[in-house]
Amino acid sequence: MRTEHRLEAVGPAERVLDRAATAVAHPNIALIKYWGKRDERLMIPYVDSLSMTLDIFPTTTTVRLCPDAAADSVTLDGAPARGEVGQRVVAFLDLVRQLAGRTEPATVDTRNAVPTGAGLASSASGFAALALAAAAAYGLDLDPTALSRLARRGSVSAARSIFGDFAICHAGGGTGAEADLASYAEPVPVPDFDPALVIAVVNAGPKAVSSRGGMRRTVETSPLYAAWATSSKADLTEMRAALARSDLDAVGEIAERNALGMHATMLAARPAVRYMSPPTVAVLDAVLRLRADGVPAYATMDAGPNVKVLCHPADAERVAATLGAAAPGSSVVTARRGPAARLWTEAER
Ligand code: PMV
Image (tube, rainbow, N blue to C red):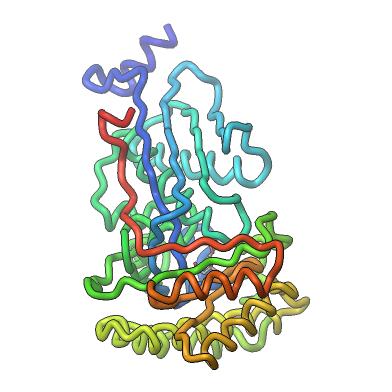
């Protein structure tokens, strides 16, 4: 009886008892940061942000519908996803089901090539891959803009990982459904700009304060937040012009001041939100030394202690060696601009 009821609900044409999709997405690093949500339920950011998608650390996620299961089951790197991570995935599936008018539970299997929750943008690649795979598995036909909106509901930075290379995420305006429509990502075409991003992983462990909690506290208590949000607007305008000129020095300077400003707002929160640790500062010092030695290198940092350094590809080896020496015990990896999120082809299954 149960089976008949289910088939009636979804319609005979959609009798797909084993519907699955696998998607791959890459993390992105923001050159103009997003920090703070003006609507936490709809995941609407206060500020626009602009990022470079990387060619390393992909997330691969399979969503398989399980009509006979009692509930969703979520696996992260081979182990059941516990606590907040699992809850966020199930909440995201609920949203996809609501949009698709479906009810079947699913299994989600996610593999991250990067430590989860360490400020290395695993939530960006994670929710971009989940959005793409879940939309396909539940039969939602979305264009990339709509997919970016959907990914944003999982993690704002994920909206940008739907696209490769450089992408902007619009904060938009309005409230409710209007705000949801107005906040999405889109590509920023910069064909001639292909810098290296050298990442010093000084600590791959999970961060003490989630970005969600850290940004909430910053918005609610930091007297510097409004000033940073205002200056970030000007940074974005200058950044777009610098990218259009493929001007690495200008891009780097703007990215570095924007990130340091974001960390300053966090430090002024009450109590302070501090992601930097002594090795972070040692790496920042090394970046200053590189510049003093005539090597254009510029740092950015997210909600974690790790430092990402923008430079010319020809300097990447020297930059990597310098950063590694500044923070003994760290690992250093170099990324370039990377591809858009995509579904696996038949041949890859
Ligand atoms: O989207 P979330 O919750 O992972 O927050 C990301 C925030 C930063 O990485 C610090 C900045 C950004 O724009 O990616």
